[in-house]
Length: 426
Image (spheres, helix red, strand yellow):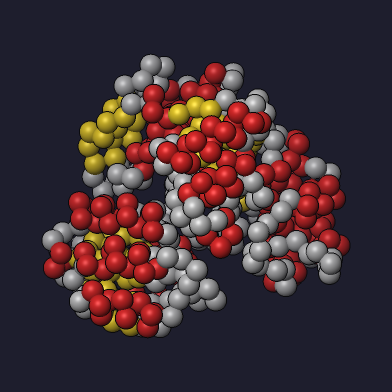
């Protein structure tokens, strides 16, 4: 089986339309010889920020000399980029071999695995085959019933809890938190970020129930002391951690994610992992995580950000006001998936910009931009409707002066389609 055949074999798998369970992924992993038992994992859940935490933490561990598997979602640059070892994507040959191994289970007509469950199994099998020292694994959706919850963690992390995927996770913060804290395991510390009180209470209850230590990130003290378009600099006032660090993730909302990473490093050191300060410095400084307030051009300023829910957009709106030029220089290219709280996202962002170009990605879940146009009209924001990302990006860029700024956001699917066009042309 070659790579094209492997991709075709996955095309017919059901998408995630119902609340996931673990039975299907357990069958896959059993068929593969339980690769998830071959290495310890760091398991990261959260509404927002989990991908950034995974990227920073895996980079630090790689620089500390460990062989590190990383599983994230969705893909942004290439279908294979969500599965990597020491920042090297799974090869087409290795991907095809893993698909070939589980092909008999893909034709289960009674309860076929989803694409995401298959990718999880492939990732864990790849990590076992490459003999990783540990893996840093991002939850895809929720946590309790996510297929990644089959891993064997030595540390779990919960970044944030906010409304998203309400049809699957619940309408309230408490319900959503219950799903996410389902990654807690007996005897395994759970590090939590700054959560809403109701979410923190659910986390405390779950940790008490399963026998996990709950650790709060607030004892890691950071101060942002500098920032340019390349790095954000932080002073660290916490014993046994470096006095200063810098990260290429320049948005100020990354401070909370950085704090979680430093807390995780403290706990991993306590567990016996050797992580020198030099590895922390170099690993953080060399973190690669595209599409998260990623500066693609400076004159004019063009920034990509994968904010895809109301909570993320609120943080992004604060960033746009702080770092972008005056309102009459700010422009927005925006598209969103139809199952998101797009009206509140639009109300948060649109009034901050002098013009908005509304578009949609090729994803079948994409919202028809005419629905966004009705919101822009009510808000009095000048807008333009263009039905594809490539044409929309071209139109949005056409009128930019060198002192203008263009923000491309609303969905990672929008960022995924816009990014290669900017990499080629800027």
